[in-house]
Image (cartoon, rainbow, N blue to C red):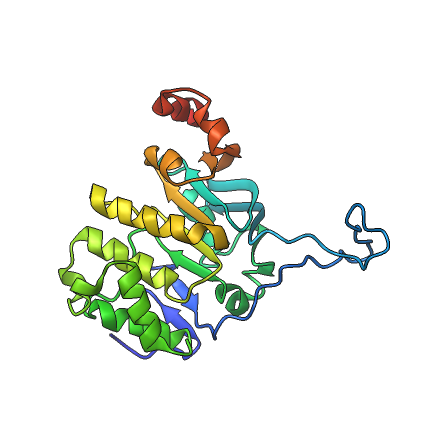
Length: 289
């Protein structure tokens, strides 16, 4: 396990994979505040009723940019995701998908722009924002010397969940991990390790899920299980799923964002994206050229 970590930090192995410790989630702010110096809009048809603000997106990328030396990884990326949406985040290797997701989750500071989770700036209010966020990074890092149950209990304790044992039991059942719960993570197949990473992301039942290639390395049955879980959760959450598996667009997503060379090339509904042509590989190549 190594040295002790500060009590307010949950550290995952590997560089840039640090998540702040959080307390049990408070209700997310679902009503947008009036802009400073501005005037909120009344809902049409209700001129005499109190002013009401429309629900805010649960995920917002506002003109995000990031460079690594001379390499421009992400440039002026903006989009938002509402509750009930499952967004497929598509792009070739090196397109900027993982960099964008790390900025959205507060694991990487943007050079410009802002990332908001449930209306909270992840750079300025990291702890509060992460109360509402579940994140599974690429490769699903975990402490390999722990068993699956120990790792999930460790994460639950650091999150300060009210009943960590019950949360672990529920998550093991949800992710179909009960049969390997007592097994060391280092001894698991890649598919099971990916499911453990997904399990820690959903452990605290967050409103926002950001999943970086969660089905990578899974066999067809395991992919089906992950998609089943996400479909069951989709109505009450905002979800971004990074993938290069085009079949997942039709199977899982309600919306598609395509990124290439650090810029958004396409942001549209699943139906509109699928209508671009029968050969999705050709569509993908055209959009990312």
